[in-house]
Length: 75
Image (cartoon, rainbow, N blue to C red; front, side, top):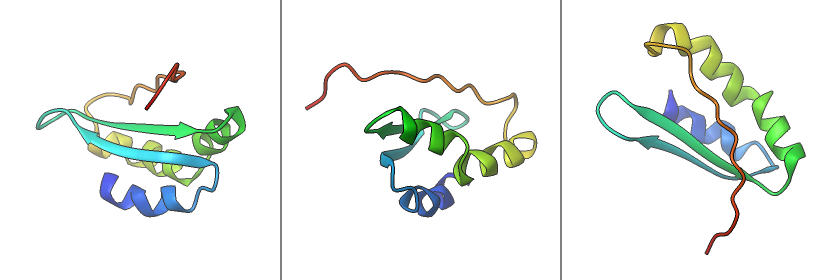
């Protein structure tokens, strides 16, 4: 699911960066960045979010947690 998400992320012009992460054998995450709020909103209603929510009952032990954050600084 996450490997296939890359192609969907590439099709989102307002998504600057998109990372699929594995913390351990059973915990995964997604981290993405946007220039501005419209990009975040488009992503949250886009194809990746739709695919994740559709697959969630089969792939996840519980509902996914979505925690928006604001990057304060970066290098």
